[in-house]
Image 1 (cartoon, one colour):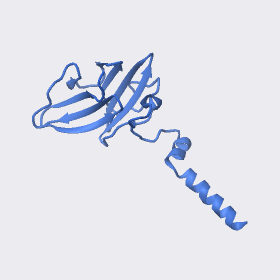
Image 2 (image 1 turned 60 degrees about the vertical axis):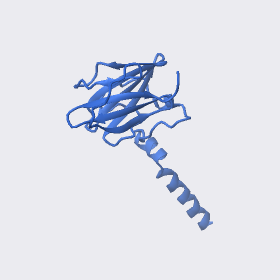
Image 3 (image 1 turned 45 degrees about the vertical axis):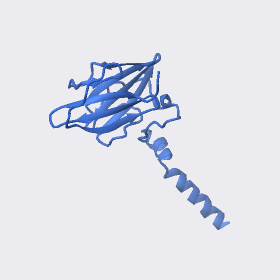
Length: 155
């Protein structure tokens, strides 16, 4: 009997120490990245676009950035914040079309699949976000930077 109780207690402890349980207890999403082959829109929310810390999962693949996904009326929006929470850009997507919203304090150029801008020659490239349809990279040079949206599937 005592062994069964200890076994049950250990199971409960394991469940409540998992990241999923932490999300339920803290009501804050656990940072995860969208995974190829899964429905990436399942992690998107409908409200909070433009907030410094929206109530949404952080989908960033880079520790220096926070990425949040939003969906409304068939359009997807990807918001990129810096580590301090300042909004740097918001990218909209519907079908195969991408655009930038006038958000954030800086006007960093964005390279889109239909309007490619070459990155600075001395730039380092960091993958910040990825889903089954596109990737978002940040290219940082000594004086300039650039964001690039690159599709991963053919339209």
